[in-house]
Length: 260
Image: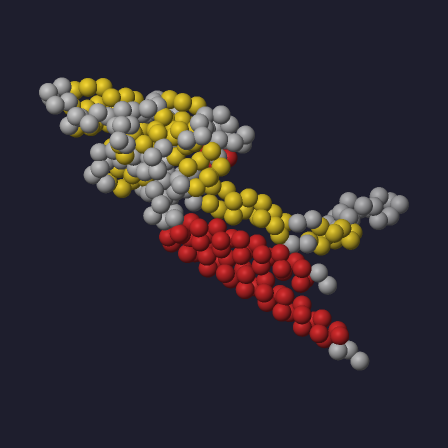
């Protein structure tokens, strides 16, 4: 009887499903977070009678056959890159992306990573950086004497000096990928390019295929609480049903063992 092992794979799959859902819920207030979805595949089948085999010299064939499955496995944790809601913060250096694109961030080891988290700051040198101190690429320097900062929807950064003159401070750029779901999440709201994502394409906000930026806003996580709770309940019920199958199989084993 394979029911014990088949149901065990079902319980393991739903356990992983709950872990994915719990990570989504835990990051409901994480800036720029993109939720994940657990996708499953059935395991190999045992063919007791193959469909399409001949059953007589007249050429009659088996229409359906007999296949016994061996359970389920986790195939992937797909990242859903849909737009999150924008929340107004009132902070000059907060930027949200409306539409396609990521900010480029230079890491201390010389590599470039990507993020939707636009909660930027100025370091001691006036350089635009993330909350962890990583430099935004391309570099934008905001002098200490700058009285006001304006960032347009197209990413143009301007400031007002002490004499009241408008000065150009830099240009925010975005990158996009052919397959954004193929990006590797490395924590700290950062993603890394992979062979699956394709190479980054750079452009200014508002260019064809690129989103725009919104100053004084941040993009919230695209996690919907109601959907996650519904998925959690479904996963819990599936887990319980698989546990009931294990219990039923155990009782059948017990009945067979106690035959006289």
